[in-house]
Amino acid sequence: RGASGGWSRVVAIVRSLPDRFAELRPPPAERCGKSVSAGAARVFVGTFRGLFEQYRTTRVTVGGGPRVTVDLRTPHGRRLFAYGFGEPAARALQALLRPGEVVIDGGANIGLFTVLAAAQVGNRGRVIACEPSPGTMELLRTNVDDNRLGWVQLREVALAEAHGRMRMHVFEPGAGDSSFAPSSAAGGSEVEV
Image (cartoon, rainbow, N blue to C red; front, side, top):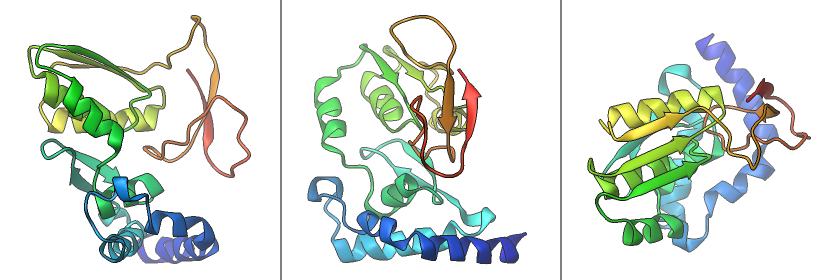
């Protein structure tokens, strides 16, 4: 499956090139001080690595401390691999949180904000991370376990205003595209949460 599966992915990538150009130049605040040329080169490297199962994941540092595993088959994973994690919201979170506080991360995805918050509140604090997508929850659990964040509680649930069950459309684990809204995008599957 390695090489032959890789070539079919190459064809899919070429077809999706117009959508991928946005990955090459994120807003300046999200580049972590990296130049567009350096980041774009890493996007291409990440795209190539994502073609092959054994190289499709890598670990990146979040906020100068904890590390998370990202999937290079997703735009989210490639951007983090290329530019790091420097969203303005992350810097605000670091400035606001103090040791011993409690944080709820609704829609935790792979745990970028979860591990960042856990590092800030420390083992006297608590982080409750909610992620309804089963595949993405596996990545979140791995990232919490790899960072030895025993004060993080994981909940495979969606947050809503009322108790109940719904169908959710999910894509590649960690892609960040899962939604309760009907999807016009090809691929993915539906799960009940």
